Image (cartoon, rainbow, N blue to C red; front, side, top):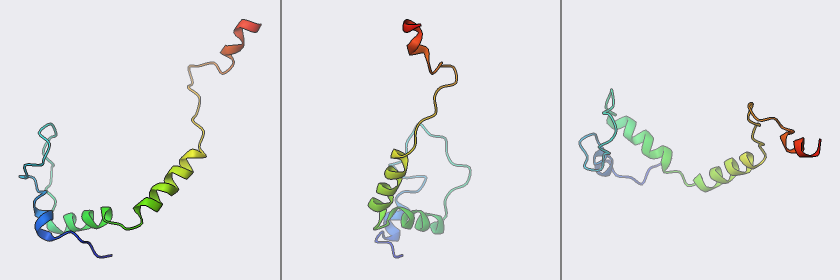
Length: 80
């Protein structure tokens, strides 16, 4: 898979970039050029919309677990 992002634009997202957030701690190890290229390729996919649709479809079939501290039949208290 070929990335449309140039190496120059990848270098602009380094640790000394003005785009970094000031609220985060600095990373323990800086990304090297190979890491930035792989990361850019990961997010530069042409099929990301289809992947998102698959994830949303799978999540729509999942039912959330009830909270353990809630009694599932509490709503019947008024009728008993």
